Length: 422
View 1: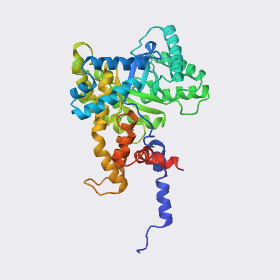
View 2: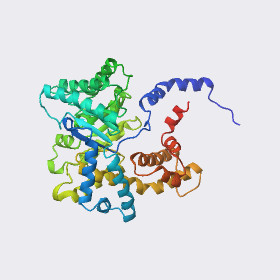
View 3: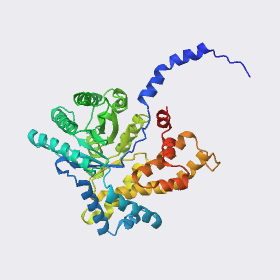
View 4: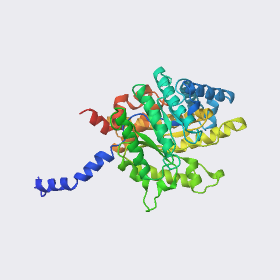
């Protein structure tokens, strides 16, 4: 064996040089935490929320589907082959009956408007009590929270008061919901996100909550967050100025498009300005564990336009999924069938090939594709997302890939598996 030229002192010197890099990677790029990400977020004016809201939307969605030929016909409208459409329809019907909304945001911003301080105070407290009741009775969506007014000067105090009243009322009722989500809209600067970090830190202190318990989403709705006045990208700084605090970035289709003077007719999730913003967002959070959500389409399946709107919505959902955006917004109950039909078809269509490659990787079998660990992680993450949203069953994964859920999770998130095994 040839003698080494680098000494122990050399290696120690390199370790010293890279200590800051090691710390940066450990602290700022922890990767995805392996928990479930909802496939959508539904927004509703805060005062319209009731404990039966999710079930009501599910019933409306099923009624709309039945009135237009059923869920299998919807699958055909979205281009699904008969066998796939039948499998998807059965699962979507079950989903709409049991968990029609995965993530619900009670809106105190655009959907609520300015009704005066007294009315919003009352509504904020009532919303928190309703959420507590719904969680206690088991009828709440897995993820639930509020969107309050933005931190621009005219609405800052109002937004902070609503946030305070909502969180404080929840905290006084007992343990916070596990799926609690807070949404900060219309962010334009890094300083606004730092202010939000300060606000939730103070709320944690006030209510004896663990540091970092109150994470929040940032809505990317302004061009200033994509390209700042110095020619840099403020959105890329966000994960690093408040590490671990931001849970997701959500793209705001219409505010962002309007800010760039895109006429209303052409404002869309697939406009080039939208794609550019989302590509920057995607790069900004890669490896940080911060999730991404696409925006919404305001073409609603109602009246004579149901089938055309479903086809548009289904295509946009599929487009987002193919581009690595696994979440989006839904604005109406009639969008739920196309959301789940398009999402479930995406995972079911991709399952056989992904599972076969995953089995080959696990069993070290030579196949037509030689996958590396990074690709195996992506394959496992794809299959795991399908399981988590209900598109595929664990028994199907076991049969096709030869792995059970714990092993699938470990393959998708090896760093997480390593840390929990210590």
